[in-house]
Every structure is written in C-alpha cells, then in structure tokens.
Length: 344
Image (cartoon, rainbow, N blue to C red; front, side):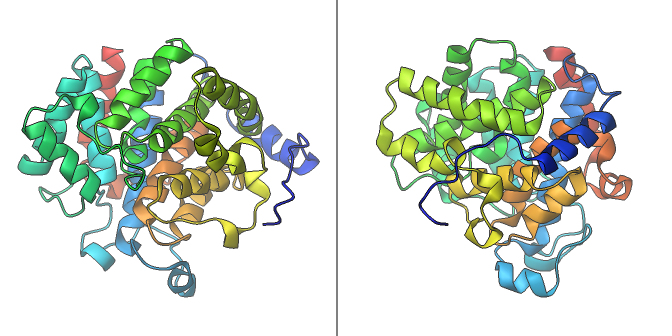
C-alpha cells in the first residue's frame, strides 16, 4: 500500500447501499436488547468459522486459491471430520462456561487446564492444536500462578491466542464503563497473552463487537473507533510505538487495502486486520467467513475471529443450516448459549 495513507471520507455511496440492505435484512432483530440470540450469534458464529478453517490450516493463499473453500469440508490438515472445531472455539467455550457459572479469572483458568489435560470442551475428546504461548500459560496456571499473570508478556509473544477466545467476554462487560471493560479485557487476555499489543487487539475487537451488539452500522463503528480507541489509548498513556502499529485500523481505510496486502498469519495484528477487512468487504455471514478462510495460513483463527463478528452482525439464523447441523457438539453449544444468557 502507498504510505500516503488513505484517510476516511465517510461513507462512499456503495457502502451506504450495503449498509441500507443490511439494515433492512436485520429489521426484525432487536440488537439493542440483549437476548438469547446474541449468545448464539457469538458461539455459533465463531465456531462455524473455526470449523471451516480447520481442514486447510497452514495452507498458503496460493495453494488454497487452486481449490477454494466453498463449503464445510472434513479431514485435510488435521484429519478431522467436517464440523470439527479447534482450540479457538474450545477456549472460547471455556470462557463462556466461566461466565455461565459466575465469572472469575480463576474459574476460567481451571477450565483452560481441564481443556488441555482432560479434553474439556474439545470437539471429539482430542486436543489436536495448541499454541506454545498458551501451553506455557496453562502450565503456569497449573503451578498456581495468578491467572492475570500467567501469560507471556514479551513482545515476541503476540500470537492470536487471546484474540481467538475473547469474544464471549462481551456479554459480561457490555454494560460496564470503558475503563472497566479495558481492565477486564486486559486481565482475560493476559491469562495467555499479556503484551500491550495483544491487549489492544482484544480491546479493539470487543469494542467493535459492542457496536454490533448495539445495532450500529459496521462502517460507522469502524469510523467511530478511529476516534474512540485512539483517544482512550492516549488517556492511559499507551505509547505511540504500540498504537502506531494499529494505523491501518485507526487511521487508514482497511477495507480499501487490496487483498494481497492483507496478511493472515498467526500474528495478532494480522488476524485482527484480516477479520475487519473480511467483515467490511462482504454483506453476509457465509461470504465473510469464506473470505477469511480463503486468505490461507491461520485459517481456523481468521475464520473464528471473523465469524464471531459476522455472527453478531447477521445473526446465527443467517449461518447455512447444513453448516450448523455439521458442527460438532451443536446441542452442547446451544445449551451453553442458554446458560450463559441466563447468567448475565
């Protein structure tokens, strides 16, 4: 991309038409009123995106482009049946379980340990994918390290392992003031990923999700966050050396950046940028998650992070029914959504 930054000139007519269509499509969904569907949007949205990406994880964009993902498929990279979700969803479900039973960091940490060593909330009783940073954090939890200090805090530990699991926290923090939201996000991220970059990414992601929950147009959210996130980070004296790394979101027009300049590795900033790019450049759940998965590399996580937002925007009812029916432990996920809703 030319370093003459693309400044927001809000909003191009084409995007207004997309926004108008989405508003009409969602006219019967009262997103300003918290309800059970919101919990389903979150859990099914992220899990379906995750499951779509599992079979092609680590494949390059070029390789996938020869045989693009167009539907839920099985086997492939991890030799798992269609509808199998990975650690992304498992750890998000562990967080959701903690929320459903009276949220504490300690209960969340116990759930993480049980997932890793007792196959809790796995798709098929098998932990087949785990990041090194998350593994180290869980080992610290086992040894009794306080949850908010269990993660890695070094700059090189900025994978997407906290971003991929953070979305259920939205239902717990949605009515809290921004300072409290940020502190809770920081604590939950720091259970595995404590560096400021990972925390900012999670904060941006959940603030975007909060806008969707409140029924705000996705382009308006993007525009508003360029001011609100930047101002909040300045208010807590976050250094420009960190905040400048988010310029493609906080200053530029991420949606206008060409696909060949959108990266999809396991680096937290790449995942965040890719998910927002996919959401802004599509107008339905199916296209958003397929676009995410077909970017290649960390396909399950890009799919999950995009899918969570797309679930909130379009509703779990918009997810293709045959994808929902293929999802591992579908009934358990629905039950978890009910329990999480009742708890908050």
